[in-house]
Structures are given as structure tokens and as C-alpha cells.
Image 1: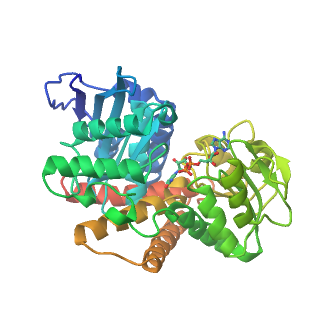
Image 2 (image 1 turned 30 degrees about the vertical axis):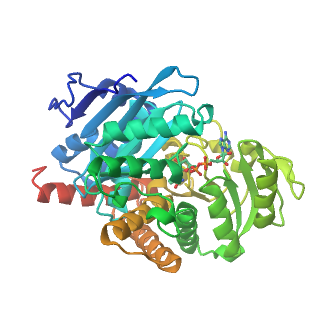
Image 3 (image 1 turned 180 degrees about the horizontal axis):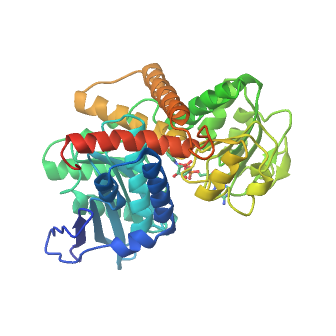
Length: 453
Ligand code: NAD
């Protein structure tokens, strides 16, 4: 087996460099700064920073991740050949607590994307008042092209390479696109073997039997629905009286549908990668789940009319909830958007300038860092239970999650009222307000720790 080698580590936002395991290459700054998603995050950061008049040193510190790590991961494949994969972990900021963020297995993974998602985790955790910093990781591969044994071998090697940098009080990974509770179980086992004792708090999103939390599977979708309830409240509507269209029927979209349906919302359209279905009387979500379990995809569901994803996004409903991909509400379709409420279940479904256009035209957009925060909130609960040897009931988890989403929404709403846009009056851009709340907490913490002056 070829020994895995840590290729490079870069720390700090300037030229401070520290190398580990014989590496000497500074890694990733140019690729990070030119990545489109990273550029979007920087745009939001600078806009909100200007809005609150942020300290220049704080801004400078947040512009680049604190540490970016790239490792090469050799895997002996089932046919006995050795294939080498690129793995990344970017630790953006840990002013507020240990780094926290998911691990993605996808062919499109690269250092720029991982860095952008890591920085979003910093802002999300700060906004939600969690004692956590922001990180993200990933391996560039198509997980469906590897056998289970190959995936396990890759995950164990990746964990081993990351082990100097992760840990229950350092950096706590979780599942993301292409990974799941089984991946986390392998990570937990490998890290624990290397430590010599069981360390359940090193990852979250684990199976319940080995320290996972009740309520984790539905957490992001449930959080989306709590955010939806609050947004409807400010629009003087009740969830039991509204029509909703949901794009994506995976870990986020499916649970958002189940929870909204349980509260009486009429879900008239749902889609996945195959297309969608529409029923103006409302879809029976339980039946739809059974249909998808049997047929894999929504397309062809007999109790609705087939529609495209594009038709779903431009429907005249009380709320559109994108829970699939980034950039789906964009310059091509923004003029056709009819809903007055978008709740961002996915990360980055609305491009920044498009969000501004829609907000200026009266739509309310609940931004991803607030709307899909349920996942990291319950991950945080899982970590707290692990390190405190506690276990909570599902009811406790749901109630605590509700409190945090409601409180965070109120803070964002109040910020929007208290920080009017000088040229336009009341700030109607909730993304700007959410970033504002997040940055104010970070700025205060960085000043207190002597990281900015
Ligand atoms: P998933 O893979 O479980 O589900 C994705 C869904 O999107 C599937 O139904 C899939 O068919 C659909 N989809 C894929 N391509 C599509 C296309 N071209 N058009 C329409 N639908 C398409 O993923 P997920 O975990 O539900 O994540 C969805 C989004 O939510 C991602 O942006 C992710 O980063 C974000 N997110 C997830 C979590 C979480 O806890 N899972 C937390 C925060 C944010």
C-alpha cells in the first residue's frame, strides 16, 4: 500500500505557514479566492461588514480560512489496483469553539468549494449562537462508483490523515452530500482506535446505537418548517392555511414535507432530480414516500400532474422551499418567481444579486444559514450528549431545536428593523440581516480574545 501523505497545510489568513508530516507546499489560496461560491460568500461578507461597520482587522481575518488541509488517499480497490483520491478539510474560524462541519463525497469537491462551505458554517454557527467554529471537508469522488469495502477503506485512511487535526474538542465532522451515518461510524471507529479509547464525540450524525442523537435525521427539514412558521407569522399567515412547493425530496426536502404536512400545510408540488408532481388539492406525503420507495423517483406519481423543476420554482404558492441544489433561483428565472416567500432549505439556492432583486420586489427570503440550521443545531445537541454522557428524548431535541430557530429568526428580524438601509429604509434583505447578526457576535468574540483590535 502506498503510504498516504499529507500534501499541504496552510494556516492563518496571511502568510503564516505551518507544515506537518514533511510537507512544505502552501496550499489553495488562489483556488479558494477564484471559486464562484467563495466569491459569493465574500460578497455577502463584505456587504454585511459594510452595513454594520465591522472592524477592518476582523474582516481581514475572516476573508480566508485559518487552515486548509489537503491529503492524498490511496485505496486498494476490489480489483487489487491502487487508486489515489484527493481529500480536503478546511477549518475556517474557531473563535467561538471547536471547528464543526460536514464531510462531502462528490466528484465536484475541490478546495474552493470546501472553503466556501466552511466559511458558511462559521457564519451559521455564529448566527445560531452555538459555541462552535466553522469547517468543511470532502473527497473528490463519485461514491456510487465505489463498493462498500472501498468506501470504508477510503474513509478510514482519510480519517487517519486528518486525525492530528480533528477531535471532540478540536474539529467535529458530520455527514454531508454523499456521506451518511455509516461513514461517521467508520470515522469514529478509526479515530478511537488511534486514540486508544472510544471517543464518540469526534463526529456527529452517527447511528443512535453508538452515540447518535434522536431527531437528527429529521432535524434539518424540521428546522426549515420552524423557520417557515416564523416567516409566515410576520406575513400574517398561518401554516395550516398555506400552499407550498418543495424542490428536492431527500434528507432535507422529504422531512420538510412531512413536518409541514403534519401542521396542516397544503403541499401542492414536490420534485426531485426526475421532475415533479403537482396537485392543487394537496399531495398525500405518506403515499408519495411509499411511491418513491418503490419507484425511486417522483416522476410518474399517479395522483398528480407531471411538472418540471422550473415550473415548480415559478409557481404561485404561498411559499417555495428549495431543498436540492444551489443556484436554482437565478437570473434566468427571477422575473418569473411569483411566490412572496422563499425558505432556503438547500445551501445557496438563490444567487446573491437575485436575492436582492426579489427582496426589493417584496419577497421574503429566509436565508440558508438560518433556514437549514436545524442540521448543525441537532449535531451540536448530539455532541453535547456525547461529551456529557447524556441522552435526550426526541421531544426534548425537537423543543430545543424550535427554541433556537425561533430565537434566531427573531434576532434576524429585529436586526432588520434596527439597521435600516440608508437609501431604502427598512432592511428587507434577511440574508444581509442574518450575516449582520452573525458578524456582530464574531466581531465581539474576536475582540475579547484579542484577535482584532
Ligand atoms: P439529498 O441528496 O438527500 O437530496 C437531494 C434531493 O435533491 C434529492 O431528492 C434529489 O433527487 C434532488 N435533486 C438532485 N438534483 C436535482 C435537480 N437537478 N433538480 C431537482 N432536484 C434535484 O441531499 P440533502 O441532504 O437533502 O441536501 C439538499 C441540500 O440541503 C444541499 O444543498 C445540502 O447542502 C443542504 N443541506 C443539507 C443538510 C442536511 O442535514 N442534509 C443540512 C444543511 C443543508
